[in-house]
Every structure is written in structure tokens, then in C-alpha cells.
Length: 252
Ligand SMILES: [Zn+2]
Image (cartoon, rainbow, N blue to C red; front, side, top):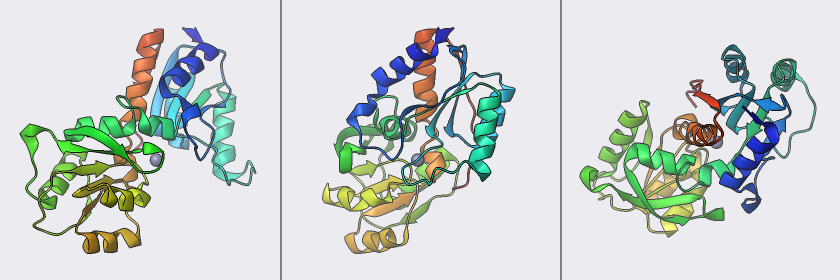
């Protein structure tokens, strides 16, 4: 058991949120119990995750996508009312870290996705250095974008969208988890042969055809399943807390 302040200081020290310009508040988003015993981690603070955390007897939820984003109009209605009601009624702390959780060099979403896919990070690119750039581990080279896309789909166990020239050899691979399709042009400029992210939008298909750089979209959720449990289990072990990752599947 530890107190909430100690837990928040430990997350802040690890993830360094002050280094990022983010789209919402990082750290404690909803205040619950002052004493913490069990953390449930997940990708998004959805109602299903909150209900699962209540069933798992957690007093703290740790997520990548919290409840509050810049640009919201501030009304507590609909889904926000439902989720907040559950958290407040059960005295559960909601802790969310967005970009700091993508960026952490060993435990973050980008680093953990690379571990899963067998990619070795050699550098960073793009705004706030959130994009990762590297090469496949020696044991798993890819002859072309099709074999890389097949490997990503098989490893993450979901269909991927790939737009690529059939024959281009793949050496340098860039990746950025979640909705990072806007990083594609920076990945092209940084010399990537392929770019992996969660989502594709209309323009990127054309950029891929016109640049010859492969674009692989493997799902926002699927690309961001690994950072939150890695960080939460690390911190839970450090402070002697219980931790459980609960995956609420999401086809997007
Ligand atoms: Zn995301």
C-alpha cells in the first residue's frame, strides 16, 4: 500500500510530463482513494474498463487515453457523466498519461511496440521527437513491405492496411503508435522505407504511392496496448502494489 501522492510522484518522475506539449492533462484526472493498493491499467478510460476495474477491486486506474482533452466544452453529460459517476461512486483514482506514455524510451508505447515487433530503435524523428526510427532485428529481415505488413498483422493478431510498392526493399522503418498518420511526411523526410502507425487517413495513401514509402496502419488500439501495462507494472513493483492489465478490445 502507498499513498496517492507518492504514486503520482513516481509516475511523474518516470514519465516527465513537463517535457511535452500535450492535448490534455497528464497525471491525476479524477481524485479517488488517498491510499492505493491495486492499479488496473488499460488503453482508454472507457466505461467497460472502469466497470472491469471495479469488479477487479482496484482503487486506481492507469490509462493512455483519459477523460479530458483540450477543446471539450466542459459539460458533464452522456458518456462523460456515466464514466465519472462510476469513478466517483467507487472512489477510484483515474491517472492518465498521453504523449509521455508514447515517448518513454523503454516502457512507452513506441518502445514496447518495437519490442513486440522485433524492431531496434536507432533514432527519433518528427514533432516533439515522438516518432521512432530503426531497423528490424538481424534475425527477422523483411524483403518487401508485404512481408513486413504480414509480420505486423500476425504479431498483433489483427488485419492491417498497407499501401506500398510491391518490390521496394525495407531497411529503415519508422513507427509512431496511435493516430500518428500526420507523422508520415516527417518519416519520409527522415529516410524511412516504411512507416507503421495505428490509423490511416485519405491523404496518406497518396503520399505512400507518390513517395514509394510504405504506409502500414495496424489499428490505434492494437498499437497502444503495450505501454500502459509496462509502465503500471514497473511502478507497481517499485511501490509494492498489485497490478492487473485489462484489455478492452477495440477494432479501431
Ligand atoms: Zn492514442
